[in-house]
Length: 181
Image 1 (tube, helix red, strand yellow):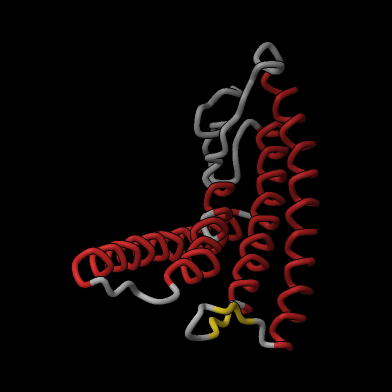
Image 2: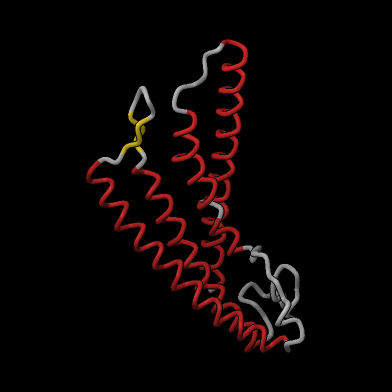
């Protein structure tokens, strides 16, 4: 299982970096658009559509597997702060199952929609040109699918920690905040 965890982490990190590149590209694109609009009264055509349909999809979904792999989700412990560590790990596993189901459904639905939109060559009108947006549907499907696999791995890792006192990587931490142990 340790090898599977490494592969998932490397893949999730690659997707995180791809999301970071998308953020950088979006920042440079918008900055260039504003500068050209103010300085030369010549904005970059299609900036709004490219930002909305390309960059934002990448920025939103590509980092999702990394957030799950690094256990970087925000946890509000209002109702669980007094629970025993082992009970919290059990609750995390139950919530993890719901997360896997939800992400897997999003991934499958995303694949079906991506196939449909790819077949028709989905585009978005950007005034002077048609912007192909169907490829971004695959980003959503891939990110949700990988996130579901990472969430499933996390369930097994939590159960292993609960049973043995150690994670698959040999640590004894429950998460980033060590709030469980």
